[in-house]
Amino acid sequence: AQSVTQPDIHITVSEGASLELRCNYSYGATPYLFWYVQSPGQGLQLLLKYFSGDTLVQGIKGFEAEFKRSQSSFNLRKPSVHWSDAAEYFCAVGAVNAGKSTFGDGTTLTVKP
Amino acid sequence: DGGITQSPKYLFRKEGQNVTLSCEQNLNHDAMYWYRQDPGQGLRLIYYSQIVNDFQKGDIAEGYSVSREKKESFPLTVTSAQKNPTAFYLCASSPLLAGQETQYFGPGTRLLVL
Image (cartoon, rainbow over the protein chains, first blue to last red):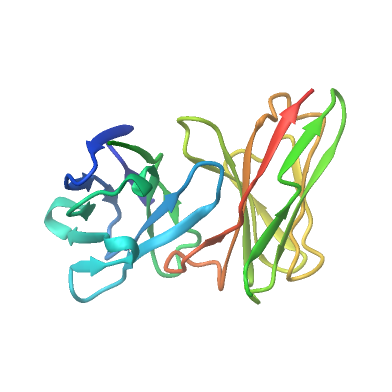
């Protein structure tokens, strides 16, 4: 069965600093990997997804993520965080013909001025 | 504009009362989902549907019921059997029920118990 772990429940960074949110997955074959963002009191929005090919994926709002098969990781990065990036971030993993994708428990990002 | 709508934004439930949360999508998606979100617990899947007139229990289906009479609509009923219904409820859809599909989320309904 597929599973995903987000080791950090809460991360605080200063505005303008770099950001890395961790995601580790468990799945036997090549997974489909997603990052979603949720602003307070709202639904989730897709930031980026990895299916195959280039392991560095660019997303919206200046985010990127790198798929590392050897480490079973798909960490989300941003070079310079803006106050509007404060939100909850969810990693998800799926597989072809394996039904619905599975979400991690989320990481809450706080941005200090 | 295509998307998912949920109503109401806030809903209040009295003891012993059933309440229904609405979810409508105009994305022509086959699959639809209901999630419950509590602080610090991420998303927990309640029910999902792959096609009209078919739905499956998720991880926390007890105390909830759904119907899928139309492709566009997937209402969730929180029954009196659900003893702790206070939470944020999210509806989502995807083109197919498949792990490679992106899920598109509605804005959510917050349910509170009076």
